[in-house]
Image (cartoon, rainbow, N blue to C red; front, side, top):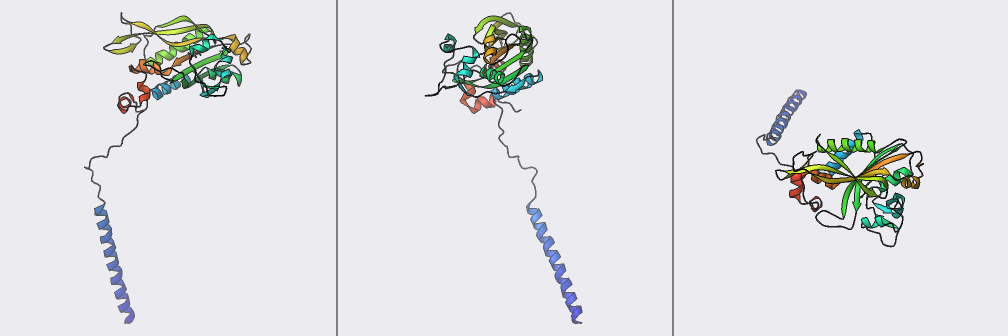
Amino acid sequence: KINQIRNHVSEKIDNAKDVFEAAELNQKLSGEKIDLSEPVRTQKQGLIHPISKVMQEIEDIFSELGFEFSTGPEIEDDFHNFTALNMPEDHPARQMQDTFYLKDSDLLLRTHTSNTQIRKMLNSEPPLKIAALGRVFRRDSDQTHTPMFHQFEGFMVDENVNMGHLKWILESFLEKFFETKNLELRFRPSFFPFTEPSAEVDINYAIEQGRIKVGSKSKDSKFMEILGCGMIHPNVLTNCNIDAEKFQGFAFGIGVERLAMLKYGITDLRMFFDNDVRFLQNFGFEE
Ligand code: DAH
């Protein structure tokens, strides 16, 4: 009898427990209801800076053209920035670039990405097909100069590289980058100590509806210089222990900001580095 009573009471208690637990769960769930009509909380997403965007584009195009990407140090020595590039001490061309020197040392902030040519040639064997992107520094500051800017360098060394290859590579790149088949490239003789012969390349552009348009065929179109290039000087090859009788190469250097200004119609170079959010919102990219 006693056992019967005990079973009866236990059963009642178990049932009551189930009821209480279910009630508790229901209450919890009803409190956690998702209100689908509630407005979404907006998340601020960062945008890609136009300079980074241009560098990504350059990397895509030149990787496709079979170039290997390399970098050199931003703090460089005199040998790799000047001497090996056929600019011995007291060479007048050194004055073309106002250099930041580090106190009490042989070190400086590289004035161009051409140091990557030397670094790469010294520690590898031709054939070479190299591209490099990076920061460079010069003591210069006004509407068209900033003390830090970016350059893009490319070069190729092999037994039978010539100016024709250089021209084709530059044409292919610029047509892809500016997304136009209407580009006219003008190779104008020029001088750089590290190339012989040297050329500067101009491209056609015009202002159309207040905006710069590269590759314009309008009757008002003009030419603008965008890069320097040439055949690598035999002295530079020799300085890098490459047999200049057997190998030759081309090289070129382009300002990244200049490319970004032309492609996206940005008029003041300093805007790139002010970090004004309004500028970034206008010219930033989502991917
Ligand atoms: N280093 C040059 C400058 O900063 C640009 C340049 C010109 C690079 C000709 C090259 C070249 O590789 O062949 O003004």
